[in-house]
Length: 122
Image (cartoon, rainbow, N blue to C red; front, side):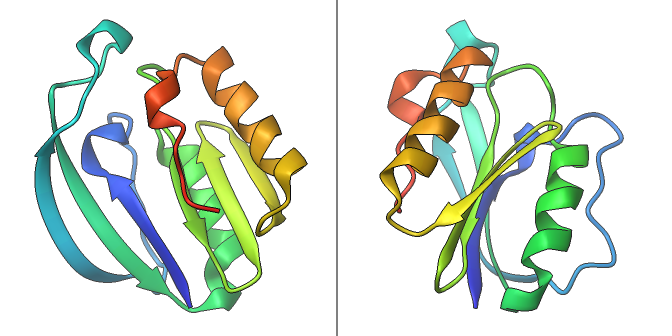
């Protein structure tokens, strides 16, 4: 089962996720944004779940829906793989593989994600 978190404010204007078997499991509002990175100070966190066989479709849809500015990404994982998705870029690697996580973090820094936010669980 896929489990992940999408920050609602990370969607580009006109971005849409549809036709995916997503199940919303929780919604929360937090003060976590970095205004220096162009992020709003308040975020709406959408916790979701989906079947493992939807992982590739979800990653592709997110890559097309996330805003290219503001240092945004969405991460999720299956039982065996980790996906870290940025606007127009997907990192996919076996859970716990250090090189895969390091590559995704390096890319995140290059597109303006504040270092403290590159803290996804492997």
